[in-house]
Image (cartoon, rainbow, N blue to C red; front, side, top):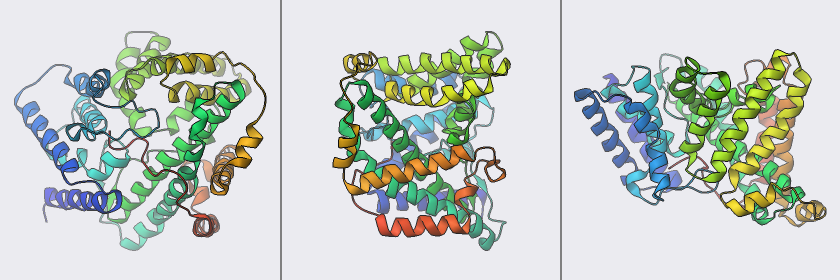
Length: 403
């Protein structure tokens, strides 16, 4: 069977899974395929200078004109069928073009429905069918268990806390930012690990989109482990070219503002981009002076405040939150009034990231590929908890998919 035939079968399988599991129409997948094929043919015929940047920022244009939603972690599925998956396949094409590796043969990878719905960005898709099914099962099946647990048992029930976005006092704002950070991680990472496992089982390797970001000693390591496919795109398209001509701080601002624009054109994303660029630079400066512990202490502050800024697109409400006014402490009441499954989800999620952090320098964490959750004992615990505590509490959606 030819190379393209195999990838067409994979594309068809992915479309069927998305239709049966996510309830999406086949038109959602055919249109991206048509768009990618059309662009591939045009690019083969015409050479447009800097087309990779036009592609990357195409989702920013649709966001600016209100055609697509901002990607702040709330449900951002495109209501316009012609824009379905645009942010992912445009970024993928931009990356491959910049690497001089974009060919018409890539179209079935770039437009693969499962990748468009859940991530990661399709930087590569390699056949590993030469490895035996038993070996693939031993390595990849645990990722499926972990992914389902993160997404279904932890992430979904946490949506019951989303009403907290309306609160503007310091304690509630920080509490919600922490919960939302946990939600996005468990949702996006969970789906990414699930898809990573499924693709591996059927004989294909895709990027491992998360590499234990909470195992980090500083914010630099954190970003190396968070949404790794987008990080690679940003490094190739923006950091390397900017760093060749400008200072590190200018290059970092360029990277994070570009990332912000990719997520959507809004005031909060602009603040988020500048905030993270500055603290990334501060962390680099601290590490150069060997202030390792101080850079470690800064990391949770950067993550939580960054998420507080990222999630709220209401400018007035965001500015009120950033005033950090104190009106009392009623988080215990909010937690106790939440559904039991939401309380447990918060505990389970916090335990996972606490273990990631506490044992970050141990041998089992070195490759940052969730080996600590893939041991037989861990898998047994996750399976038992998953069976006992699985529920329909919360809202089921992919935070990064379908836009």
